[in-house]
Amino acid sequence: AQKVTQAQTEISVVEKEDVTLDCVYETRDTTYYLFWYKQPPSGELVFLIRRNSFDEQNEISGRYSWNFQKSTSSFNFTITASQVVDSAVYFCGAAFRGGADGLTFGKGTHLIIQP
Amino acid sequence: KAGVTQTPRYLIKTRGQQVTLSCSPISGHRSVSWYQQTPGQGLQFLFEYFSETQRNKGNFPGRFSGRQFSNSRSEMNVSTLELGDSALYLCASSLGRGGSYNEQFFGPGTRLTVL
Image 1 (cartoon, helix red, strand yellow):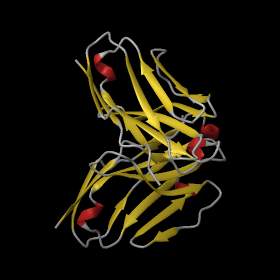
Image 2 (tube, rainbow over the protein chains, first blue to last red; image 1 turned 90 degrees about the vertical axis):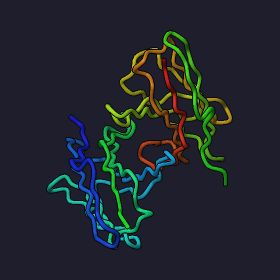
Image 3 (spheres, rainbow over the protein chains, first blue to last red; image 1 turned 120 degrees about the vertical axis):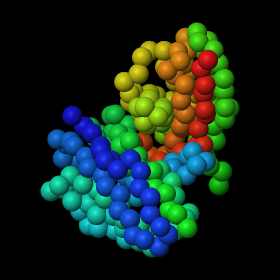
Image 4 (cartoon, rainbow over the protein chains, first blue to last red; image 1 turned 180 degrees about the vertical axis):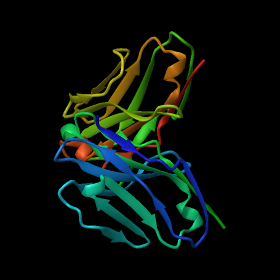
């Protein structure tokens, strides 16, 4: 079965703390793409990152970093020095089977950054 | 550059009615995908269109249909509405053919309430 799991339903931290959002996926495909999207209260999903299954290089973009480990089928997202504006629901997604099933999303993690 | 627009933003219908939702992709984008978001099921893929052809379809009943026009605008239709169809319907556009493999730009969604 093709599946994406975000075990953390909600995380609440105080501003400036570091926070890691977990994402685990299941697939037998050798080629697939992994994504992270952010959904602020306005509703539209905002693209954060895409990673293909052959590229395990970690990525850093400002305060955001992503750790992709094929050995554990995980694609975790870390926010360093969190800010109130980071408060949102974050979705991990994957495109399996050549994209035939669209994006398979996890249930999302609601991140609350308290001032 | 204008983003993805969806109309209407809010809609209230009664059971048994039908509804049509519209999506205008970013200029130049030829791939359009639709997703349903509910609190219980999360984000689920409905269909993907490219150059007026449906390329992929999610696991939804035949009451859900869609189409894409020559200008890449897309519509989705739900007939014989059920209470469970109440959801946020999100449209996403991307530049290339492989919609789900690419960075997708999402619209703000149409909030459908079925009474």
